[in-house]
Length: 139
Image 1 (cartoon, rainbow, N blue to C red):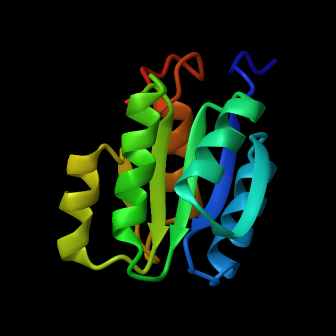
Image 2: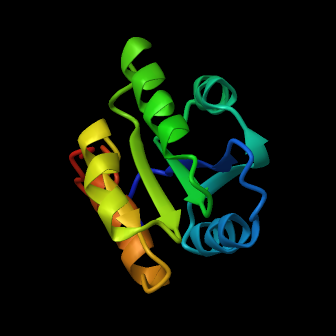
């Protein structure tokens, strides 16, 4: 019997990024791994994503990014800190330039998954880093 906690993740695109394929594919991968997914879709503001995280009581937020909306990801991280929600694991994925990855991590993004990342690496990262899921420590 699987003793892992049921994990719940919000998956979304932020700002004017309308590239939804990555978010849809990752949502499917996570669901197949037994993770509950709340898919918000495109054109979400940082405030909308934080509100959904509150309403849905999620363990993690996944942002699929294919546009230069990195300041909005920073705003999302700031909002989570302001609301004392910085225990929520935030990961990003997509065509994010290498030079942008350290900047996102400085803002508090836990991990960035580029297009070369495997499904297994994403799922394992979430299970290993969400509190209560297989002993994870939440960052």
